[in-house]
Amino acid sequence: MLTVVRQTWPLLLGVMLLMVGNGMQGTLLGVRGGIEGISTGAMAWVMAGYFGGFLLGSMAVPGMIQRVGHVRVFAALGSLISAVVILYAALPYWQAWAVLRLVIGFSFAGVYITAESWMNASADNETRGRAMSAYMIVQMLGLVSGQALLNLGDPAGFLLFIVPSVLVSVAFTPILLSPQPAPQFESLRPMSVARLFRVSPLGCVGIFLIGGVFAGVYGMAPVWGSAAGLSVREVSAFVAAIFIGGMAIQYPVGWLSDRMDRRVVITALAVFGTLVVIAVIVLDPGIWGLLVAAALVGGVANPVYALLIAYTNDFLPPSEMAGASAGLLFVNGFGSVAGPFVTAWLMGVMGNSGFWAYNGVLLAALAAYAGWRMTQRAAPAVEAQGSFAVLSPAASPVAVEVVMADADNTVEPVQTAA
Image (cartoon, rainbow, N blue to C red):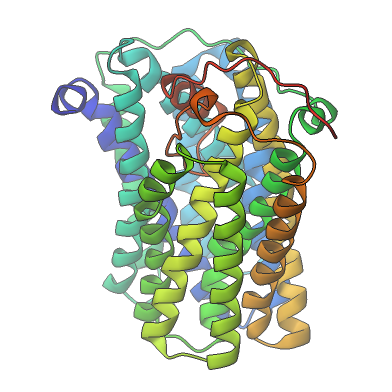
């Protein structure tokens, strides 16, 4: 791993700074929205804007890279991100924020695709998997660190918007000055939704549901925290707990899923997440209970996302895995876009408990569907399953393709039943 870090440190450092800025600005907007008196429904449009932009960027940026190259796309989108973060404070209106979030989501999708392509090209066959694992770890560390920086200033002022703008601007320096040449890039055509559903109904439906959970937990958490009266320190700790739980629980879950039917693990995690949500609604815990609940729900959402991709790939030959992963990310994006709107609606109907109820309903639906699918066809033999790979829902198809390939998913396609 040390060799990998030495070879790719400019990229890892740049990604770390980018994720600090990204994690910071997302939470900051939720807090600032409460200060500005923006309604929960309006903030749903703001938070959904990021996921909508990310979905559009995932589709459009590969073509941009092919036309003008990695360096120009990277620099242009990085400049947009830096400018948008400053404009948030200058234009404290939800309509403007929604448009700016769309732009920043589009830009971050392009930045991830470019950085991950560079990371892929900078490693050889022996180190590529470890390099991408280091990339995933750095991503999560950056997001968590961004929450800590929220306590450096007043969210009602300008300083906390200047900090992520500067971090994003500085982040591109080590990457663009890296001696690694810009890689060749081939646009990846996603597998169609109809084909995905035939291959794995659970993968297709599950990834849509977990996309909604991801958007509800990660996107609306700061909005919920502000509405619930949490302090800035408590909101930042709550969001950080989600990310920490998401990373820590992936490893034991992955180890377990490689030794049994993945659907059992998916069902168990979804049931556990549902019970956690019910406990929060019924018990109304204090801040420490909320932090534990955040870590547990985040610890369900992240591994289930990776499990669904791994499970789908268990039914595919290696040549189709990349297209399937891209198609799953596309489906996941639609679930993510819908998440903030439904969360906001339930919060309007039920109060702040609507935030938890939304995630509980989706997790319960996932548990029920996964349990039903186990009655419809047999699981692949454990020895024929590929290895679980740690993945972040923020990863682009480039990272997913590399990580899954390194996991040695070499099973033959299995006859499926829709």
